[in-house]
Image (cartoon, rainbow, N blue to C red):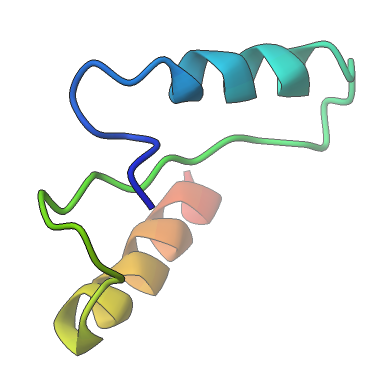
Length: 58
């Protein structure tokens, strides 16, 4: 859950792995880190699909 925290190298690792697949049908969307050490709460869970829909619609 903390892959996107400030200073994390994981987004780069993930993007590199996706890029190496050479599949234009695979996209990467990173949800922002919530600055908390637990899973997203209800409000955060409701925000994520909105972000995903916006990403898909672009």
